[in-house]
Image 1 (cartoon, rainbow, N blue to C red):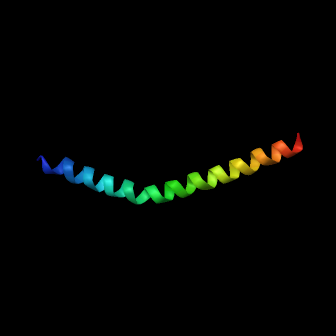
Image 2 (cartoon, rainbow, N blue to C red):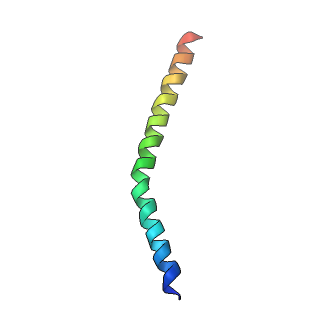
Image 3 (cartoon, rainbow, N blue to C red):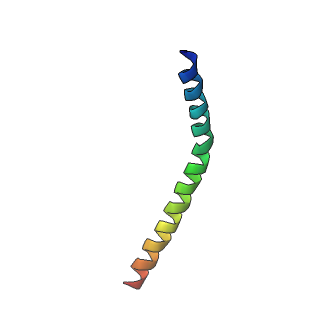
Length: 45
């Protein structure tokens, strides 16, 4: 009985770790787009 939560937690953790690189790539892309937007706004004003 005690093993079930541990296995589920381990599976979830592994899945989470697999998703992290994708998450970081999205963050980088968002930062680049945001920086470009701010740059455009600064140039216009």
